[in-house]
Every structure is written in structure tokens, then in C-alpha cells.
Image (cartoon, rainbow, N blue to C red; front, top):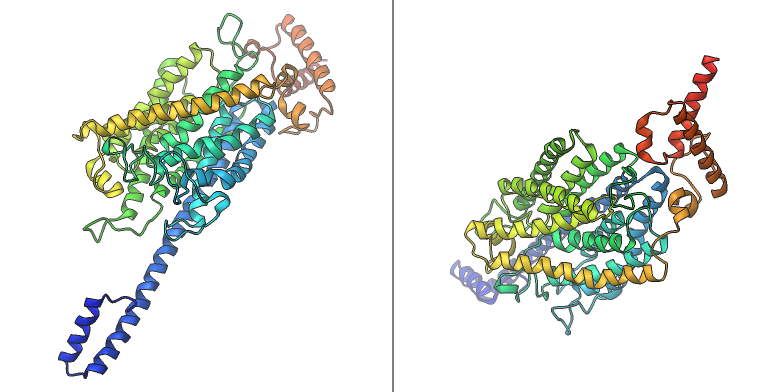
Length: 541
């Protein structure tokens, strides 16, 4: 029978015989009822799969929209002369990552076959055997995981912005999404992995908890960016020869920074809640609560952590600098999101506020250390995603709630040290942080070293000074009618004339002193400053 077990079918037939039906009639009626019940059951199963896949696809679209946020945030955080370059690298991160993750990455991360092992996947390359009913993998699952992989690559691009050759972006992005990231994903998220809490073989008997990628995505991208920026060195003029801060290289467009921040916030509602993968599962012993409850709660913890971090950064930086600093607050908000990502499903809302508070201070401290070490990261990506992602992993080991862990992962997992769960989960989290840092270091550091060794990493000095939009891409992000250069020679002549006029104007004390902080101001700013002066001269005459 389609939906009746043998004993259930026999019970139904006995019931019909008791009602007065003949033996043959009872069998026929029993078969008919069981077949109808089987049809209904199959319909329910099909609808459940459709709902879960629709939920996963909608979450994928939200996560992919974070690429728009990354692009806007990066564009606003760099100088105007490199806007086209950083926007194009964001597009290529997604495109190159899409091919490499399709060919190799998904198989290394989630491939399951007769050769399963705890280190690396061994199936599903180029999506062979997908859909796979036995493991529950459909194309929606691939798309969801691809959107995570390219997020890691996008994080790295921010660390090495404004001075990196275009070919280097293609190489590191393909390598990161096709091999480096998938191995960590396999260890933590695959049922065969040795590090995570999903599979039967779990580290210290409990496994490390990284629900949505605080370590797998944010630490991987941040640490890769750390090594890229370290090997490449700071931007020209960022520090003086004696190591003191040099030119002011703050981003040129605060509205783009805010737009990117809000788009990332919006996308995080797919990133964290969407990591449940299914929405229709009910909790054991409950007909009211299920994944739908946990998904909403995860959205709450994500929001509270980001809000707490933003407010903490606001007042901390006000105390340090005397200003209400917009870019710092935006980065603080994102730091809270990155930190809560690992434990968003297993910590309570009140704990998420503490997580965000700690993340803000981790970011501030990491930025201070970076300044002391003369480390230059235009978007603070390594500090934000690497440092705060690691903080979130450790925070989960301290504050994971027993009931929430049970609802999310099932029995046999650990919970927070400060919640009475002992030290097994915390130990697993510490090991996970160390392992992720070590793996990315031994893979991405040689990658960037090789590129640098063969002069494939950093652009020429002249190109960096002039701006990569003009020298590398032959275009500008902004095209006022009176600000177009057809060649680098024309641009260099304009810069020379601008510098000469700045010197003359400074002798006449007509240039605001604040312009001197920038060393060589943007040609765009100077040009319109000179236009204004010419108007004043005409009016004076």
C-alpha cells in the first residue's frame, strides 16, 4: 500500500469486517482508502518541498543582494579616482566565483559519494548528480551556497583595494571560491566534516557551532584580505617614512557607504535566518513552534547585535575623536552582524546585545593595532570580518543556550560555558578559530606571495597616483562636462598645473589650510575650486 503499513492495513480490514463487510469487500475498501491516503500524503510531501525550496531561493536572493551592498560600500569607501576599479572587481568576484564554485567548489564542500572523507568532498563537480534525493540536494541549495562563497571573495577585495592589479583579483577570487573556502565549508557544514556540529563525528563530542558562517565566510574572507594587504603593503602616502599617518585617504562618498550598509543589513536577513534551509520543520513535541519561530528569532538576534555595535561605536568614537563619525558607525553596525553570524540561531536576544557590544570594541582595538603596525585596509575588512568573526565564534562558545542548540542541532551537542554547558563547546570554538586562521594562512598567503613575486599583485606607482579608473580602465565614475581626460599625459599635465596653482595660491593665503592635509587634493575638487576663484576674480575686476 502507498501509505498504509502492513499492520495498519490489517487493522483497517479487521475494522471493516467487524462492520459487516465481506472479506473481499473489506480488502477492496482497505486498498482504496490506503491509496487515497497515499495520494494525499504525497501531495503534502511535494508541497512541503516546494515551500522549503521557495524559502531557500528567497533567502538566496537576499544574500545575493549583499553583492550590491558590497559594491556600494566599497565604492563609497575608496577615493573617487578608483571607483570604477572597485565596482568592476565586485562584479568579477561574483562572476569568477560562480564558475569556480560550479566546477570545483560545491563538490569540494558538499560532495558525498562512496569515497566520503572528513577533509574534502568527492562528488557533485559541475553539479553532476544534482538534484540528489538521497542527500536532499537540489539546485536551490547550490545557489544558496554559491552566494555565500562569493561573499567571502567580496570581503577580501575590500582589503586590497586601490592598489591591486586586475589579474590578481581574478586569480585569488577563483582560488578562494574554488578551493580554500569550500574546504572550510566541508569541515564545518558537511555531514562528513570533522570540525562542525552537523555530522556524527564531532570534535570533542560536540563539534564547533558556526551556524551561518561567522568563521566559514567572514573569517575566511577577512584573513585572506589580511594577507593580501600585508604582502602588498600600504597605499602610497598612507604612512610617512617615519611610520606616522600620512595623507588622508578617507572614502569619497558617504551616501554610497550608507546605501551599501543598509543593503547589507537587508541581505543579512537571508544570510542568517536563511541558513535554516527549511522553514516547515516543527520542533520536537510542539505543534506551535518550529523552524519558522527560530527563523524569526534569528532575525531578531541579528538586528540587535548590529544595533548594539553601531551605538557602541558611535559613542566610543565620539569619545576618542570628538566627532560623530558616519563611516565608523556603519562599520560598527556591520561588525555586529559579522559577530552574531556564527551563533545567531543559538543565543538569546539579550545575549545578542552583548555580542554586538563586544564586536564594536574588537573592531576599535583591531583598527588601533592596524594603525600601529602600519597595516592599510581601506575598508577595515580584515579587522571587521576577520576579527569580529572570530569574536563571534568565541562568543557562541560562551553564550549558546541549551534549548536553542537542541532545537537547531538536536541532542549530543554542547552549549555555552557561561550557560552551564561546560568547556567542550568553547574548546571546539577555539580550535575552529585557530584551524580557520591556519588553513587560510597556508593557502592564501602563498597565493598572494606568488602573485607579488611575479609582479602580478601591485600596480605601477604612476597608475596608483593617477588613479586606476583612468590608467587601467580608461574611464571615470563621474563625468562632469568640464572634467574629461583622454590620456594619462593630459591628466598628468593637469595635475602639474594644479599643483603649481596650489603653491601660488598658498603664497597668497587663499587656499583653506584644510586642503594641505590631503597632500595632493583630488583634481576634481581643485578644478572646481579654481573655477570658483576665477568667478571671484572676475567679480572683483
